[in-house]
Length: 463
Ligand code: NAD
Image (cartoon, rainbow, N blue to C red; front, side, top):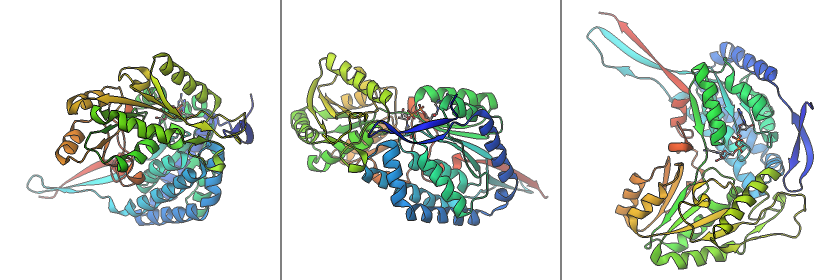
């Protein structure tokens, strides 16, 4: 058994580095170190001091932005501009949560005569963070950032396919002055290091972002230790375009939400529901754009990079084949540029028209650049189709009718609804998470700070 895992460049299919293959013993040591930090130096820091350290880390991340972006682009295969955006977002999370650290506080509660009652917001203790490969820096920023702000000590298990920027962030955290054990990282396989972290009795809260199947395992492991979990799982997010929408405004969002990070985004807008009177027009305009899209080496910064690995490429290609055999029309496909090495994990983006809302392509997360267009008639049917999947992460509504926009926002089953936009520029400040099989509890914004803390009530009887 090798004690390292190769880092494969998805753009070439070749190994360019390696990471340690962490074991349950390594997880145990990291949890012990985190506990020692929490019980010791870290636990004594004031909220303002924690905030200052986080601001220092944010500044360091920006100072190292070029190196981090190139490393992420290489390790994950994401186009360089998208990797740069991830660095900026990561720095912004530490800035936001650094600023928030000393602004979360408890309450005093009116109670019986002769009593004063107050609540304290306290950290859980040691928090575990299991991170996927698709947005490592952003997800560490939002989850570890919020946990540290509340005073927890964090043990982080990045995805085995994309750990290098996490390790880099760990070095920057040490340079910023975070005490040993507060930003503890263990790389390794999910079923080894990840499972050991989820099951460790010394963990007081688990935050998991990844697939539904593994989310179930993590929740089961947490249940045995009776610790809270945050599950951020997949999605099949709809964008609903009504006939009165401003199409010039909507089109760039519709395309970008489907192909960003080659479709490997939990909140990808992977279904576009189009009101029938404008269906042909919108389909033609999206197809026009899809036909120009290129996939190529990440550092060359095309519209799309490769997918993360060979298994993911096979999975996506298989789902595209099923959609073709279901008889759905390929309205357009992009192309792979000639400079793309043959060993890379490229798939061309593909646009399917007239997709049956109950077909696998419209029900299952592809996690690749395949967009399904679905016609609908009227608000009622739009709601039925949009809500008709097991997921509920994000939804978009495009209309000029304010009343309809609000009706839709209230009726759509999703953790976030965007009206006449999608993604809102990343939205560090905006609570994010799912309903139904997309998970529960919230990250981002102030909401995450409540999730990474617990409330203690102190009732004082003084007469
Ligand atoms: P994954 O579930 O395979 O892996 C996620 C993490 O879990 C990795 O670190 C992996 O090593 C670890 N893991 C795997 N098996 C484990 C086990 N048995 N016990 C504990 N940990 C284990 O997911 P992925 O393929 O890396 O990521 C893609 C999925 O993540 C998609 O479904 C996507 O929608 C979802 N995702 C959701 C969000 C969100 O915020 N809702 C964000 C990004 C990705």
